[in-house]
Image (cartoon, rainbow, N blue to C red):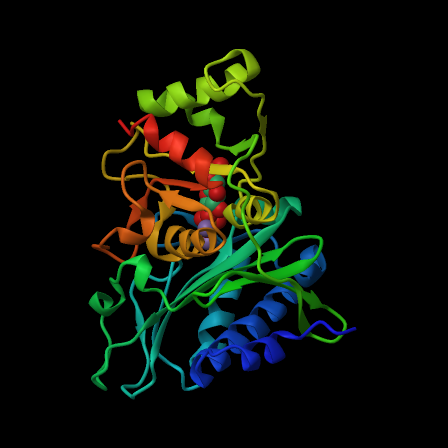
Length: 326
Ligand code: AHG
Ligand code: MN
Ligand code: MN
């Protein structure tokens, strides 16, 4: 078969050697995470870790396993000056050097689905490290999403897939579990501009602000409502799986800010979830905003900052934005 492997694809691209090595390391690590996930109860990987993270969430065993794998594998390849993760209180600086990159990740996205054998994922974002060869700090990671060098996710579904952008479009690779190779199976992924499918956790409806209520009411009204077409709804509760569906056939994904806790502007994390997904979706021709602002233009103020997210098919995301935020 003439399709390239991830390695061949990266060599043929103009990605610098250090970025190629970093992406290969992340991909190999995710293949090992896929293996751990696939063992399920046989591998003793299900259930709670008995610890909490900085987000105030209970950690699953696989949150911790995947985080440790990402840290260990990526610390040694000489491309990184530091890492930050949803599962770690503070950034993890590596030895001061001239290594060019910082890596941020959500090691296991969709943790609530682990124990029920539903798709989960890993999300990652690559930023440039400061030029001076000093130990990095949290401030060095606080770069707007538009400055990401690369971003991607791995979805551990019926097939394990890597979806990657280095800033020139989006490509999808499928893991051959027998050989450990990633093959380019979905080159040049694009998100259709229009859609008839939306994703939102409707059990939060009573907490939404009026513009989101009005928009979702109009989606529900279907053909006879003001939008004039019928919609279908899907919600996996793993952002990776929901975004992968949108990357594959279009749709709009929403996790709006709501009235519950004024200190939490949304549920999803800007640095580990919203920014990498926004880069992928934009690179595929879609759009991503927080209700008022393009996600990739938000100036981060903290590594664990949360943000409202509307992303997917461009025309539908623009329609949602036109309703206003709150
Ligand atoms: P994580 O497992 O990394 O904490 O992320 C879970 C996120 C995201 O994957 C998903 O879209 C959302 O939380 C689901 O939220 P609800 O449980 O409120 O549906
Ligand atoms: Mn997540
Ligand atoms: Mn997570």
